[in-house]
Image (cartoon, rainbow, N blue to C red; front, top):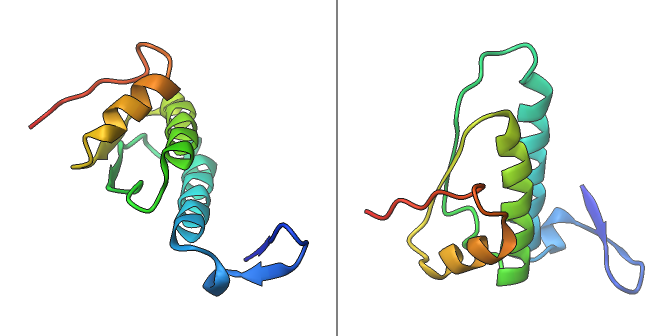
Length: 102
């Protein structure tokens, strides 16, 4: 996998920030799961602290992508970062988010 820096230079995953690499791998997992949806029974997608290396802007983008993915099945996201609830509420349409605090 490669990315391009602002100057156009290609870089590999090993040179990406932790947040960028985490986003890449999450995107690949979502794409692989999406390809299997038609031929396999629906199962919930359970994610634990996948936003830990994301700033709020990236987290909002990921949450929007997960909301789109959830249109085809249930997505559960566990985190202990309470500020992400505010990020999610700002990024998602009402009804796309259910918060359960333990």
